[in-house]
Image (tube, rainbow, N blue to C red; front, side, top):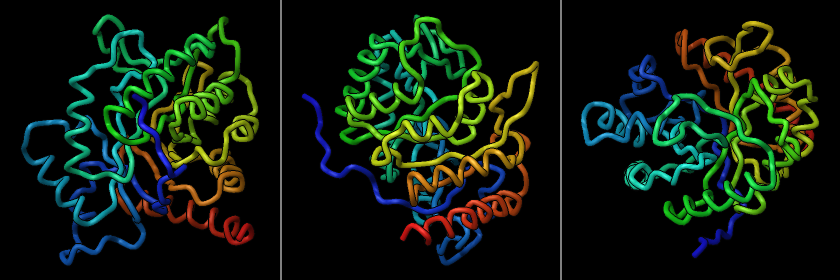
Length: 288
């Protein structure tokens, strides 16, 4: 049985941050439970809280009382040829029942083979065979969770000769066939476009508007002639420009900033978040 969903997208949440331990106390500083006006919502890494108990879950309960939350995972391995990890999905569903997130997301990738986790987000060949395989697995996940999920485009550094379509054609068809939503990582589009010599704006143009639920913004670094999605630096101007193009196409989409290494003071990220708001506001006003 395949779960059917009536609403095309979840309500937009505004502008948020990826929750990191460095900022726990500052984000909880408002004793009355009112969240900071500059942070509308938080994205939590699912695997950090798929545990039986302890302080992380205690903190998570406090954040749940103060902010809208979404759950973002790195271990679903939706593109793998290994069977879906039923125990993982069971734990994910249990966490979701407690957190009541606005939505759940993961990545369009595979993360291991023969039960071995590679601890990386590996790209797929964009073939009809891979598309059919992933669509069936997405439907299985959505049936298990009882909700529509989001899948994120990953950054990539290799391409497959076997690919029969572009990444954006694959994503668009996946969203349609599996009835899932998309998390567009704007930095990943820029990174992959640079590494594989395609126009990032062609990527945006090929994605159906009604399937885009969330944007990620992040920084990157350069290594050996490639751009690497490291999430350890400030967002660069070309990514900001691509974000503005994305807002023009997709409208008021929930936007958040990721920083996973060299995590700066919270105020630094809030300044970037304010910049995202300032870029989006006139575009959305003009479109209203």
